[in-house]
Image (spheres, rainbow, N blue to C red):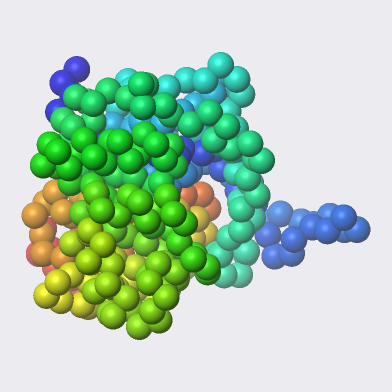
Length: 312
Ligand SMILES: Nc1ncnc2c1ncn2[C@@H]1O[C@H](COP(=O)(O)OP(=O)(O)O)[C@@H](O)[C@H]1O
Ligand SMILES: [Mg+2]
């Protein structure tokens, strides 16, 4: 198989066990679950399923265990046509497993992860440099940190692009993410990241400061409040689409995956943001981070129905 890829993702791929419920259980009381699903997840894992389902040629590098959990979390990647030839299997049960509690009324979620998640991250000697640098874009989430940093450096040397998921935060941004920034071209974060990184509350001002750290595109997503895009010469807001939200798990992840597809198309950044916002909105209408990811044609239909025609 040709290793000419559009995107290589290097990061976390989880098995998500999703419980949609109104009330959390306590040690005194159990609870009733409105809906249950098992789906693959993880920031880069889900982003790559989105990119692939939207038509990009994608490879994913990460780790998986040797049990049924690993098979399930990889299934939707295989179904989406993602190349897993450089994935590394570990000889023990998969520990990248997350219980996701999704609030029935808001679709917002909280996670319970396995304690020893990432007990054996990818090592640099397990990476295939030529494979990674064959791609136009490398997408990272900060997991497998040593390998992520090395791969980002290789991409920079090769003149290729690096995208980083900065995650959302209510506190300060960790040192690992800060260290990666100098090798990042496109930084897309969740809510609170700009302030957590710079200490500055104003998104435009914080965004400009972030551009001095390496990235030349900075996007911060804000859930149902849409997203902000900041570059050297512009700063604009993109509103979210109103949809019947079931579960916001994976909203940010698929936004990333769609965003890279938009960049590959060579669109202007307004268009890239609208496309990614549409993909995320559609994804939020189903329980699970991956099951609701649309195809490219479904996104065009969604935009058409909302009066956004001749997008392509
Ligand atoms: N409740 C929602 N309704 C519509 N769109 C949403 C909703 N939540 C998220 N999105 C879309 O997904 C994008 C990413 O969501 P966000 O909540 O910021 O990421 P995450 O919580 O996964 O870090 C948003 O910019 C928005 O376009
Ligand atoms: Mg959210």
